[in-house]
Image (tube, rainbow, N blue to C red):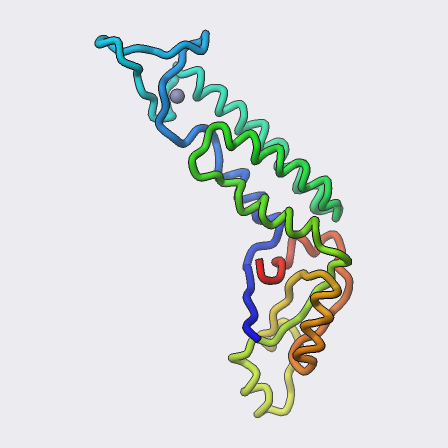
Length: 191
Ligand SMILES: [Zn+2]
């Protein structure tokens, strides 16, 4: 069985989203204070590179980014409390703000991970020995102890984790139920 690991815990994905978006990131028609297009000397719309001091569109984007950052910090607090449903609501709101102004949303990975986490039923920590280390542990007659033995831990719903253990009981085990601070430490399995 191939085991795919993500290296990013849920809280890290949110932190990356917070620093990854600070305003509009596409070229757009510059707006004045009234929200009207700013025209150049030929009467054509003036385009803004997203860094104009006077562009009202950019200012609204910066305000939205600031609000998304605030929502992100609240979402991180919710994750640390183990409240993934609340975290999802907050991350969805931050992602929604960004969608109006950004071309390649920085919040996409966080939304994906928090959605997956919030849908997990009875999450547990699962420990897996990577296949490329199994032969050497077999030769040694001793599989050692996490994390020194190279095994990897991730978060998964108990039923799926149980299926994995059933398929591969020698190298896969359920460590325990997830505790709130685990969401900041371990990646989601297969995410
Ligand atoms: Zn602008």
